[in-house]
Length: 396
View 1 (tube, rainbow, N blue to C red):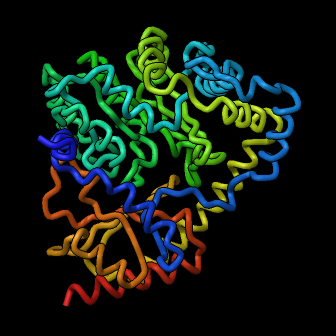
View 2: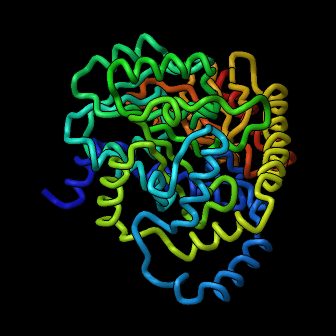
């Protein structure tokens, strides 16, 4: 068997290059792209980061350029622990936090720790395609649980938890990717009860939680509620994605020690200059003011897209109305397939992500993910207009 055949077999034939395709359309200047999950570049605090870069070089010198420890810069870990302590009334310290190479790194390390071929993972249906692609490599058995407007289907979740081979549940309760929905606090509380009942580890992904423009942040399913849990976070959405900095937090320090051991074998440590840079920036600037400005920007962009969809999309098309985050999830009229629509949309110089790669077992999928954060209101209006016209053409 050739190496290429082995790789394809390892991924069960799943389209592993879909993220690369999304990013390729996102950087094509001729295309109005709603495909990538890209933060708006006007939100990057470039001048403040430039000041921080100069300051850490002057202050820390070679330490900012030398090899470092696997767990990450202690000052940055303490910063995140203190922030969560104030928010949740916990007693976390630096040992409860490991800095990661983006939160995506955890999608590889966690199944590497827990999953042998055939072991079970509970996921939302649909779920984040980047996680599914990372998990696929370890050949798990998936137990997908449907999402409703208020969160997870609790009956399906309990049924999934009854399988003896389940090793963890992977959930995105706040502005879920791809749907943009947020679980209600009532739904989250019931999920926590079920996880405790069946003693199941939960990996709670929260990359978008700070990007709320309506209402209040919901309670965590795990952190502060249930010790057998880990929270994934990132600086990509609130500072800059190019630094590739994220973190994993858990009250279970033993879990993080195992995590760090696997991480050490993977990359020795996360970029230490980036860690110094983000830490210095966070401690020398009003970061909450910066987040508030991002939220105001994204609110206007989300409203622009929702208004355009109401105006241009035909009857029979439905879509979510998120209270934050970066995505809107649309469902095409009966009989249409988003994967068939995608190449025709690109021909009209507009791009989205077909729903297929977000499902474990996609069948006749007519859903699609639309990102509103990386386009001006004018571009959003024009792009949704093109897409709406195409949908109408395909309905004839």
